[in-house]
Image 1: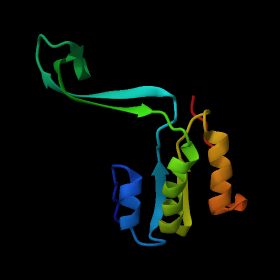
Image 2: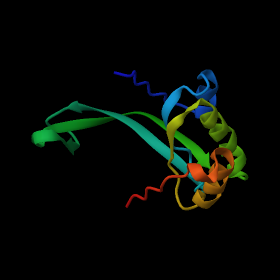
Image 3: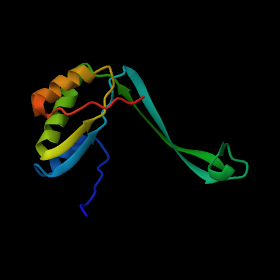
Image 4: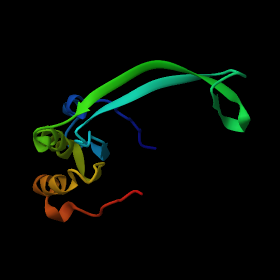
Length: 131
């Protein structure tokens, strides 16, 4: 069975470390250029009869906030941010590999044109739209 490795982090830091044409599947989930501050709170939960949330089979849990990260999701030139990442993705992707780029309506049309330039229009297979 092939080895599965998941890299978590800024792909511009991770991708240059990987060998050319060595990856079967790439999923890239960049910021969406929403123009807003994006914030995420990291929590852990402990079982506690007096907890503030209910979990599996009605068990009660207490939420403990252990961190918070945020970033300004604002790019003056979004494609200048994205292009070097996609160039690196193209370099490491096998010829029969698949690339999934998760992006929303704000930038998708520009990203599609960039992907066509980097990978060729014939490489586009389909679009997945979530609801």
